[in-house]
Length: 233
Image (cartoon, rainbow, N blue to C red):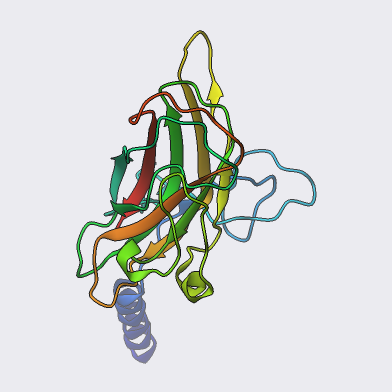
């Protein structure tokens, strides 16, 4: 009798332990950008050199193939902001500003004026193929001490260096493509550059100055267009 009672108690304990045991986590398959062997506990896909490292996963999924999360621009606001600041109908001198200061409202709100700058494109309706430098600052131009006046030598003031966007200046050389008469040139930032407004009273602006890298001849005041690609917070 005692043995039967003990066996019954053991069976009840086993049932209770099984009922309250923590559930096994669902199997997860992780798709890597570059992987060739199994990392601990995950299945990997793709082909890599023998000495490849494992970067961050791009699309974790459960065993049914449903995504667990998506890595990327979640909740961001993608926007391209065009700018057509007037230029002079003239032949420019090397290192002269091609148009004046360009205050560009790249941010979404003044409560959080920040985001990622991911691309700048220079377009010329007249087919300019001269390289230009683009300077970018985290303030509106009225709060800067540098000089960027159309068809005047660009002058950088040292007081503005703390507000220079990291990675700038950049150089872009427009090119005529296919059978067109216009030219375009693009600089894509990989990864995108974190930017914010640093005006004492926050604004939506970054200030840009486009500077000649040669002696282009411009035939129209609306010849030059600049597009700025932003991922806004």
